[in-house]
Length: 407
Ligand SMILES: NC(=O)c1ccc[n+]([C@@H]2O[C@H](COP(=O)([O-])OP(=O)(O)OC[C@H]3O[C@@H](n4cnc5c(N)ncnc54)[C@H](OP(=O)(O)O)[C@@H]3O)[C@@H](O)[C@H]2O)c1
Image (cartoon, rainbow, N blue to C red; front, side, top):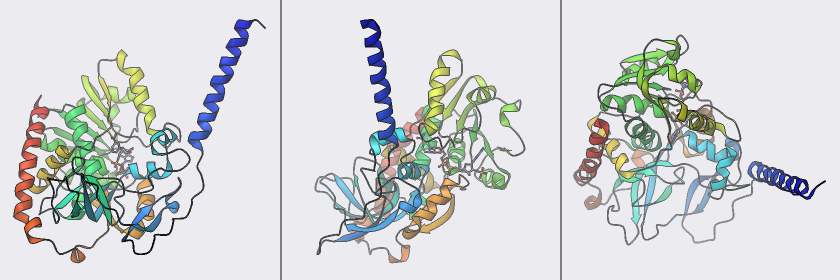
């Protein structure tokens, strides 16, 4: 063998070895370890944790040291939390590639849940926008627990007084995803035709209402049992996918929001206007390695060769967008559809149900019953104070909605 061939073989073996080692490292899941004892005298709280990757059965309702806010953080007493597919992705550590950030072998952050609504229980010394007693909602790791900490500049906003904690807890990830899919990626304009595939799920139920609020003609796709629900949310047309395939019909859409991935990308193209936009939000694919990432990769390869726009979305929790949705909820333009409610001890059951892919709207974990909520500091949490602060926040973000929805 020549030196050139020897070098080539060596490099090849090194590359194969690196791929095999990475594959083992990414797919390996360590066993669950027990929770450490909390030292005596330390204030405690209950929170849902996962100390290893796996099915909902690995979740534990743990007693741990109560969170306390850093200087720029707000401590929120959680009243209700919302469940999202993101939760089971983290729980299972799938697709495996996400373990690059969530932890190889075992999760680095053991707390479960993101979406929450609750009452501000304490604030760090540099916090200026929130006060003890404020009713808020937003997103932070650990939402399936009695307390959660969140940086004031991150995903947190005031909850309208006429919206319940459960309604608000159902909002953050799903409604922000719907808003950013329609307004930012879909560039939806008043009068345009938009199709929402997966209109009866968490993202879809918000997308139908938000698309109407943005002035579009809305077609929702769902199964027979959800047709009335989707119509009641304001859809102008509803396609029952068990009876009709929208990609085979004559109608062409300016924008398609795909929450399901039920068709190949070429099929969606048939249903799009020549310059239409397909926004790839989600997919039912349970592939362990790439899972829902396959479709954005396919879109990346296909995009340069076609006139239509294929746009994957990775939603970002923006406080300004939360405030836009809060204002719509306060005005009754948007509401959360809640399929089932669970207690904190029933989080595993909630995630099991979500994993069936059959949820109508949202699932909510009721952490603190409204009747047992803490008595609020009258000066800090009055409805009038909350309402005026909410309107000052959403007016800035509302401008953004108006301008981007009309460009
Ligand atoms: N890109 C992002 O930033 C982002 C953010 C949030 C969520 N996501 C992803 O978006 C997807 C949707 O999230 P979600 O919270 O809405 O999920 P979900 O609530 O679990 O969706 C369930 C709904 O999907 C419907 N569905 C199932 N198969 C369908 C089909 N073939 N055609 C039409 N509808 C169908 C079901 O209705 P039937 O029972 O009637 O079939 C059910 O109502 C997930 O894959 C999620 O991971 C992505």
